[in-house]
Length: 460
Image 1: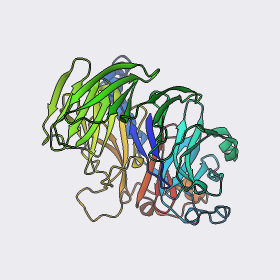
Image 2: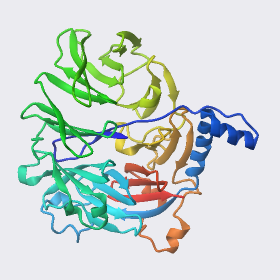
Image 3: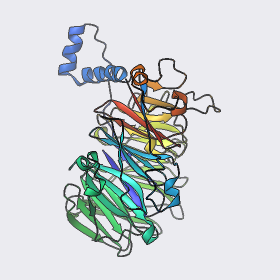
């Protein structure tokens, strides 16, 4: 499940919120029959089994394949010089044995895992710069969000193409979306996979609109020039209005029909900057500069405060919807908190490679139990030049597996060598400067992209 918001600009930046899962508990049963019985009748058994299964699933991963998004011959029709240059991978999406890789310059290529060949490029116009990708599982299609040189990269254009047509090499068989909307800066489009909705903002008209992600019909609009921001949570939307000196007006709306469920003011410290306001089901998180974190239950107005020395403003959140917990990212570290403001888990070996928490380098599994990230292979070595792919249990903090260059068990698959694959990189080169990461759960494959525009396939 994910949420992605795109704003008007010729260069791609994409923020994501990823949801996650349940706490495993130890299984101290020794007897095999009892263990199987416990797995069938108890959640504790399932959790313990899943953890062992996860370790096995990622054991003996090898480099299996390499794809290249750069092809000077295929790029001859492009008008924009920067589209013809080799560029780093910023986003990877996979669906139906097809891998989509988007470069920073705005080229998107589709590759087949059946043939290990490039199928096509998704840029169907000579001046098209693709900014972001979204796989719509509701109708098995890929949505591309693009800007164009013909209008000076000033507005977002969305297009949906069925995966089946892309697999046939027909990227032009799709159709445009939201043509009635003027998505010029600071306008945006946000795809919310959790609720099956699309939120657009037309800055020119100051109107927010909510669409159904299944068929793209408009459900309702919100027209209020005093709305400063909208946050989406399962089943609801939080409207944040222009701040008064001592409070901020807030409204909670039903995501389905836009009806107002609750309207209230939240008191603020005067003359202090608001670091963030976030909505998580019935919990409201508010943090001001150099002040304590406030956690408000909007149902009964119960307020919990967390000392500013214990909870410092993170660079990103990931809400764990099912267990009432949330992940925070700060200075390369990941931590798990509950809504009493208590630190639940810290990770033993999951120091992120990039300090800015690039969420395109992080993947949360649909079972919501694992986090896969590009990390420091050796956290104590500040001079290391090659990172690792770390797979950790979200709620215990334990590292279950690592793909690293100095591990002798990690190499290029012998079967791949025998089949004269496209791989030109060594394992070390493939793990240098990883800029995007995706895990295909059906195929049990990890895809990484690097600064050279190459995509690498890892599996066992």
